[in-house]
Length: 341
Image (cartoon, rainbow, N blue to C red; front, side):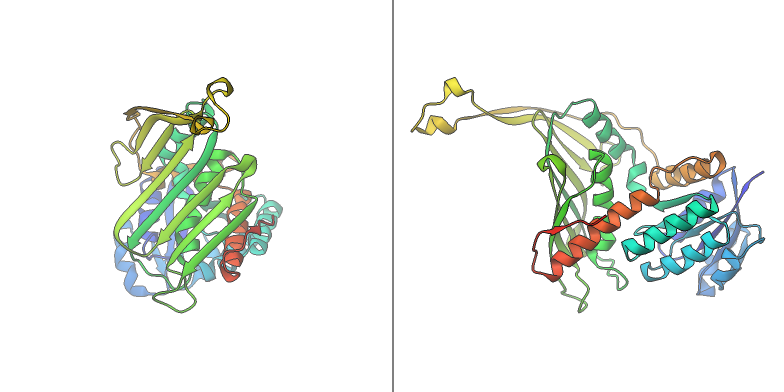
């Protein structure tokens, strides 16, 4: 028996999803939907049914066991709700919905129907990010002090979501995963340089328990594509660069510590003496792999084995709540805003 997959949305990401489910031996592409019939040419090679009506994909008793949604953010909730109401397993691309209230409703519907609800936080299935989590859990970096991330490029410019919701969504999901925690407060400031009311450059910061601060830059107006994360611990530091697929992690044996009390002399510069350890950098071996393929395979395994996904509904709720707090902060000139869960 194979799992029947129905995909709604053949835009930027949809064809990649279609390819991965087509190549998975445990699934079959039952139906693909997009409002534009012209986009059918992207998936004709898979020999599956094409429709312009999303209702055909979410309908009962149509051979579709699981619905995959890769449409604009404003459409996520209605499509996801209809799929869950009809007993379909669900994989929806990030962000899961436009509000935390909508995500809570999707969680409730999935639990009532007894089906899998998963969100496409694809970087949780990135081998580099998973390796960083192992380093943190092993204490290799020591106590985490702060994390800094950058996601920049020249475009693509969106109208359905700003740079915060489009790009920083990834970084919040990553930091929640790495720290095994969730932010308590957020602050953000953005600039609407291309479209009124849509911030295309956003600087945001999120305060996690134990004083860990995560800061991110998201931009559609930079000349170069950058996907980097710097993790600073009190023992070691690392840089993850997703644009370096063969060696994405550089681990630095570097730290700064305050001198012992006996070494300090009150009233002199030595009172503020610090020791700098400037050791070598190493490149940990990270297995190559396609994160989206791992994500799709994980979704199928969770459906077939009735398991809880890594990027489940609660995971999505925590990310959306943090985005909402950061959005409120932007509207109020970067005031620090508590995250409400």
